[in-house]
Image: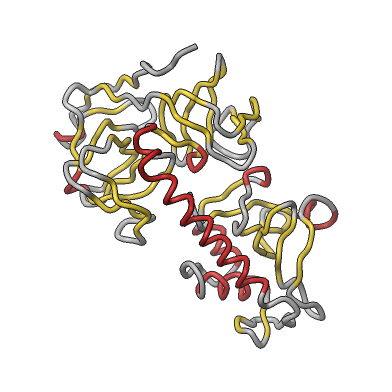
Length: 294
């Protein structure tokens, strides 16, 4: 089945800005950039990449000054000054490419707790039908479901121009985090510690990230709340992994790949590697969280 001509139909609404008078059931607005504009992780935050003039985007939300958008398989923010809605209210995200290490889950609803409809392999082509929060609504064959946006690259032209360099940069950042974390192997656990003389669990993760990629909150709960959560089967190296019980977070580490993570576990122990795929940590796993996006 060929989805290259698939359109997202959007209906006009008088409650929106005139330049963005189009929306569908998922709050998706048809728009494009009127000039080269910085694409940021948060409103006014760190720059992910620069979008060329004329880039097609999906606007998820806006507060007048900053627009939350989806483009090239990622969600982020751009200045509303450089965004204009499409005049005909028809917006085609068309086909997209799944980009992951091996496969990614297609879920019934836009969350990691919902039913897994199928597993979609790296390089597969999907049709993008909408956006909801950090998930794309996609069609794979005859199945419609939701896929986490970092694994879906929309618009082949954009992907070929930007995703290779962005992906390479992301891989370098992940390696930087993992190499730096490994340099503290054997460092003793110290309650409340957040320096090379001794770490507690979140003191270790916050220190590693602060000195490599960017600062993240100090405590494990705050780290999870501030970042984009991912499931165990969506983990990538350098993602954070959280553990706990009854909905509360009590521990955090850094995923290194192949079912392993590095952490500062408890009093009497040291920074070390442990396994995620079996045993106590597997049973206590709550979620992962992404700091570095492709």
